Length: 180
Image (cartoon, rainbow, N blue to C red; front, top):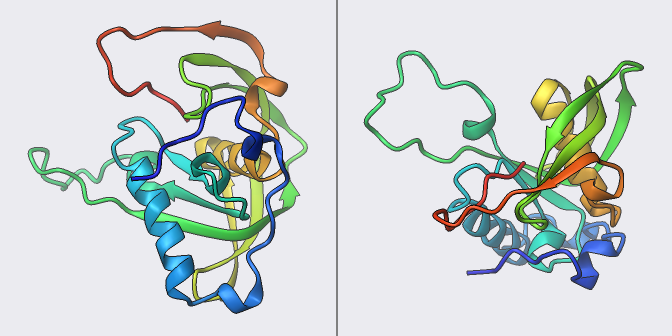
């Protein structure tokens, strides 16, 4: 399993490369996405992951939608939720709301550090699917925050670069920290 790299790793500060046209629909791209999913799955409160966070210098991020959306009222409570991953390849933010709001934030690559970031309340993202189809997705609230946070990762920016009120919280009893 690929490890989630931590602050200080060079790949987190580099601008990620676009996924080249010839890579869409290939087993190589499918393996990269699978590696990202495998790294994110055990992170109980992790909601998204960018490729550079597992050492891959490409413009890809995934979002665990089953952890972002509220649970369905008719979903069985005693059964584990099947992961629902949305994949965004070569994403670009094409529109943002004027209004911004302070949001609590953390990161799987900056374990135990939390702060408040100013994020747009609404964001529209243009990206591609693993087979190359183009799509646009608008989001508000937490998903808009995720779009901005993960796009920052692809541009070599960590949330701590622009967060206020940074605090460090250590969890002695937890193996995995809660992060966004």
